[in-house]
Length: 248
Image (cartoon, rainbow, N blue to C red):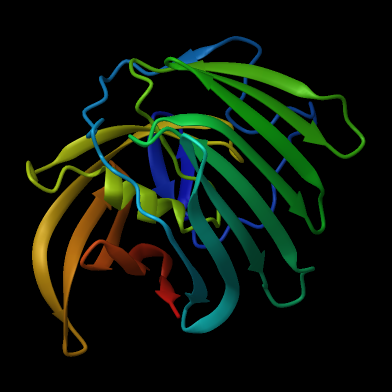
């Protein structure tokens, strides 16, 4: 993920390896109270997910920084998006992140779980009920930490650190018939922070001889380009982070 929450906006980050915990043991952006988003959701509640699986390579400043494997498939009446990422930075232990996101057919999240193993070990679960996200974070050597986040709509998007297949879901949730700029409320579970992003289609682009659709994802501090072959996500570019994610 290239997202890190700072105040009320999302700022770019090349690769986040682990949760940076303050001395209090509370994750960044977390507080004893609740958080709510004031901006309304404007996503496409009628979007239809599609089964797919694939692999991504992660490059930062042209150098290999990790990889990810994912699968999005039906599970009964719901859908599950499973991802496993390995982040490799020189002179640091490899960090392995796994995630499972259960969704309704229209993309509404039901439950999210992630685990991280590396220099630090952590895991968490998020249960979504209406516009409320109930988070339980478990850190090695610490008591579980819980927090609630409130949104104006249940149709929010999960975009977690270093799990790039979740952008493929975002591309499905974008209303391609309506087009134009569309705003989505977002939760970044590893950061335990909410935010908002705007997604806009910039139309077909010629990329290395291929015609790809360009979706621009941005906030006040972030700009990412999603390149799609039809509705298949094939590349993510973060110019400010000198990072690129390429589908194999």
